[in-house]
Length: 181
Image 1 (cartoon, rainbow, N blue to C red):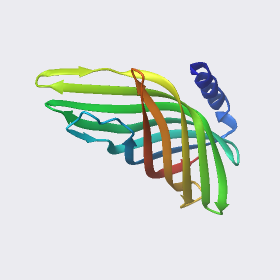
Image 2: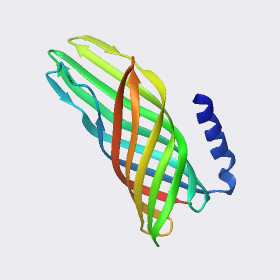
Image 3: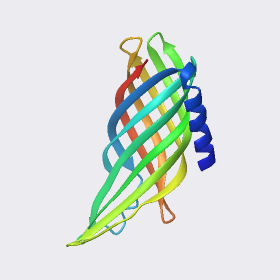
Image 4: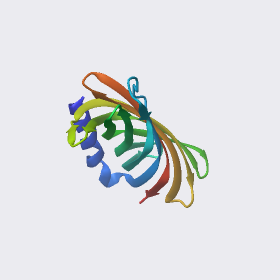
C-alpha cells in the first residue's frame, strides 16, 4: 500500500505542469466511532479540518494530495484523563461532475497514511504514543462556484485509524473554499 501511495503521488506531481491546479481548505465537525465503554465521560465529537492540493488532468478527473485532522476523542476513566486523535496524509482521485454551470458534485477515493495518537494522564504521570497505518479513504462533496476560480465546498470525508488492533472509523463534515489557478 505504501508503494501505491508513493506511485500515485509521483504521478500527481509529474503531471502538475500540464494540469489545472487547485488548493482548498475546509473545516467542521468531526466524529470518531470510538468505544467509550468503561469511561465516566467520553466525547467522540470535535472540530477537524483538511487542506488539499489538486491537479485536474481532464475536466472531470483530478488527483489530490490531502492532509486531514479528524480531531480528538476526549474523556475520563475515573481520575485518568485521555484523548485519541487521528490525522492523515492521503493521495487519491477526485471525480468532478458538473450538475449546473457553477455547481459540481465531487466523489473522492484514495489511500491514506493515518496516524493514531492516544494519550492519557493521571496526576503528574502521562503517556502518549502513536501508530501509523495505511487505510482507504472516501469522500463526497458539492461545490458552488462564486467565480470561475473560487468555489464554496461542502464535503464529507471518511477513513479509519487503528491502534494496537483496535479500528476506529473517523468522519469529517466540512465547509470550505477551493481556489483554482
